[in-house]
Structure formats: structure tokens, C-alpha cells
Length: 78
Image 1 (cartoon, one colour):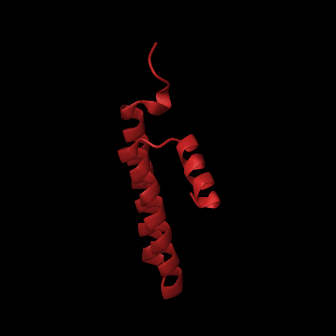
Image 2 (cartoon, helix red, strand yellow; image 1 turned 90 degrees about the vertical axis):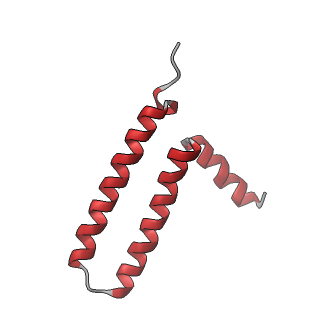
Image 3 (tube, rainbow, N blue to C red; image 1 turned 120 degrees about the horizontal axis):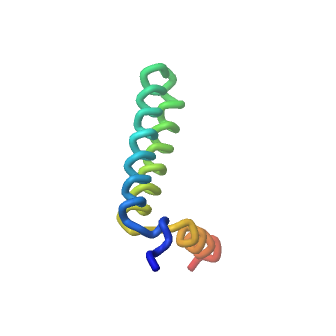
């Protein structure tokens, strides 16, 4: 029996590439229309956070349950 679709590398790559491209396109559209330095700062930080999440999904193969375990460990201070 094949593994569930969410753990196959092909679909993880497709998801990661598509979401990263959409994320970047949205940021480009916003940056072209935005003149507020404070808003640009927060937008940049949000982009970094989104890219970290995409990198862990693609490179480490993290799933939603892995993220939940990581968040629980961070709350406990492990």
C-alpha cells in the first residue's frame, strides 16, 4: 500500500513551491504599493517566518503533527 499523500516527497515539493511562489507574488504586490517603513518591516518578518515554515516542510519533511509536537515542547520548555 502506498504511503499517504502528505508524506510523499513529490506532493510536498509541489505544495512548497506553489505556496512559496504565491507568498512571494503577494509580497511583491504589497511592497510595490506600500510606502510605510513600519508596515514593510512587519511584512519582511512575516515573509521570513513563512519561508522558515516552507523550508521545514520541504527539507525536514515536517508534518502538521510534527509542528504541534514542536510547539508543545517549546511551551513546556524542553
